[in-house]
Length: 317
Image (cartoon, rainbow, N blue to C red; front, side):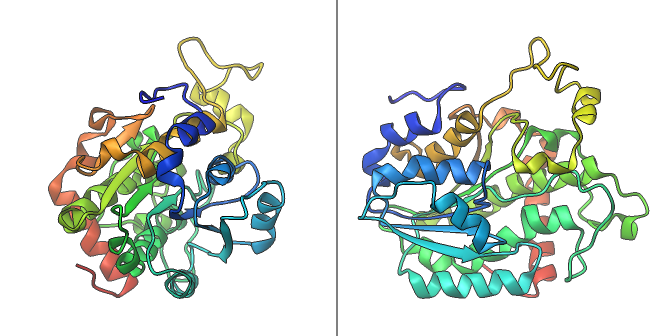
């Protein structure tokens, strides 16, 4: 397969790109049962990556995934405890990655939270969805940047975004929603997903000339993964994402987890993307047209980068 599309599965994408997966060092965040990260790990396993670093908040949850996958003896599996809501945890995880590897070929950032019902701040004082979906990954990626730049094939960073970013009104002047006074769970989620796109573009602007590539991937609408744990079925029905009987509305196509994971695999390994600047991808292809205008604005790219540096109290290139 050389053409990838909406219905491409993770197995099909991995099989087509098998020779580009073999021997690679890959990090996947958000690896828990039923997640996109778990499906990506499962799909990559037969194709002999050299090192798979599987990350989540709980080692126990990661091991439930690991124990269900038949890994090649050629693959070293590293289990990484990572709480993206804690900058201290992110720093500790980054230190382990730097110790375990001399280079990283791809980091696939599938971990996230969605529609946290009530305004919640992390231990570092940052709104939870912004912290987990963007800031934790921002810090982790930059801390391991020397390993990504050491990749012989060109490091790839793959944040997972969502079409939900189009519903957001981005306000980088106040990511804490005036300490929760005007918090809306969907605005907060959408904004954090827009930041995934801005981050991908910011990475390309800063490191693209050194071989790094970054693609923000929209996996599509997938109801039933752990990401939707805060959303009741009735709310999906009210949003128009489900019919009362649980089926998809006419003209509204849901994806399986395997279909949702496929574009991430393409983004991480397809050599045809080697000369592609930081972009948004969906359905296996580059489609910057799916992004809201604010998510492509240079001023927002720079503003988010500077804000993120301020919040983690560390300057990166």
